[in-house]
Length: 371
Image (cartoon, rainbow, N blue to C red):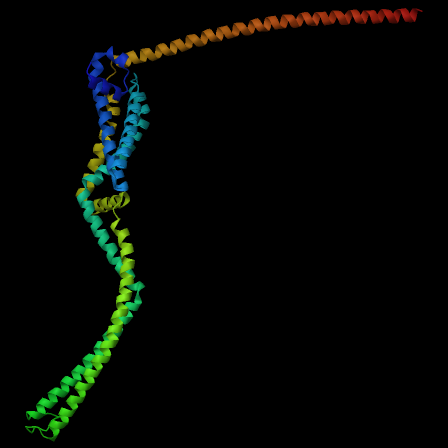
């Protein structure tokens, strides 16, 4: 006999000795066994991928994936092998309802990791978007958590504004000096060409403005260098804090995060939601297939022989019970009869003894009073 056939018989939970006596049932139980086996295989793959996303290590994922697959395989095998074909179809369905509910739950558990694998690219894109949002939120919170940097930047802007005003004043004096030299008539110039008295005054004002600007630049540059150093210190502290948070953001790739991303994708996209539903229905169909095969298949010779073997066991049990009960009742009757007979003899002996003693006491009293 083919070893593969025997293996699928084993997967279906069928009794080999009975199945060999009903060869027409062989293909049916090969199909049931193959369905149970491949359901366990899919469960192992799904659990292995799910655990790989948790441990990020191949060996533990393979070990626990195989363990989960064997558990699902054994459970499916038990569910299928424990079902019996009855003459009453409703009785079969009534007994199968709890098994179907359990099969649906197992299908949902098995399908979810494989859904995560199928939509891996879309999920990774959604996770990248979430990471970007987390990074922006982290930077914003850190900026609020380091107000000293903003205050120092305000001081730098104030120094720059002060320097810009001095430069604007110097430029304005420069324009007036040029206008005075070239004889341009304005409200602040004489309109005479050449280096006259007014031009020399404008030149002196320009020199003073330039000296004041150079002095202000030196002083502000020292202050700005000090502010930049302080800003760099606070920025380094902020960057250090951000790097601590960055590690957690980069690690936002676990099973729960991927399931949350898949839920967001199915909410945003009707096509993905429909595909998600079809995948779940596919796994539900695969998981419940062995049960439905048992339910919709007609009662065959294997079921008759199996019921006959079980009925023989029940009859043998009844015979043994009746025999044991009869032997027990016989022993009880014998015990009661023998025990009560001995008790009656003892009672009779005691009564005789008491009677003789009483008679002797009466005779003694009579003789006493006669005297």
